[in-house]
Image 1 (tube, rainbow, N blue to C red):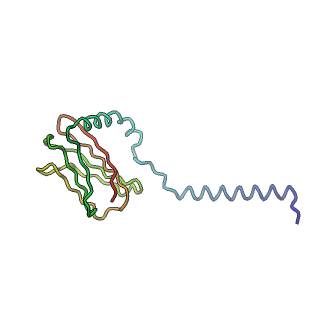
Image 2 (image 1 turned 120 degrees about the horizontal axis):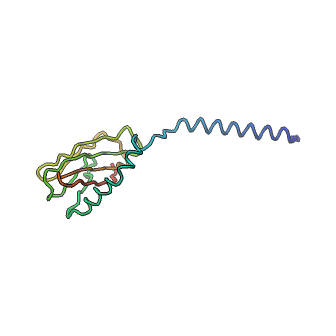
Image 3 (image 1 turned 180 degrees about the horizontal axis):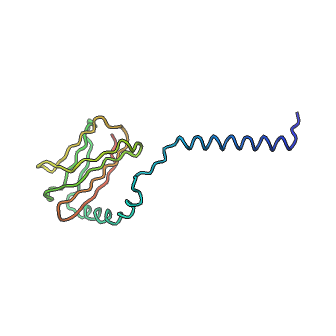
Length: 146
């Protein structure tokens, strides 16, 4: 069977429209939310974060973030030379924005804080610690695997 050029063009354009409609349909199913709801405001605060990072790098003893062998808790060891530490710990899950949560910095007398991770999604998490000792502000970010 021989197809003339008019029928070929009609078949080509019909297939093109079907593929485009399917592509638009699939793109509406994709969650394209930003990493942060305040993306541009966060970008303007970048210099402040950079200063906090350089303060943290200048410490003699760095903040340590470790996951327990059981995988049910995250331990933070704050520098011992800093007294009265306060701030915020932000757990960021790149794969699910609804799983993100924040915890206040509240280390014990041994400068250690334990955060339970039971009930959290397994996978990659980014732990962002923004803390201060009253004189300087510090920031550390580390990727952990639960």
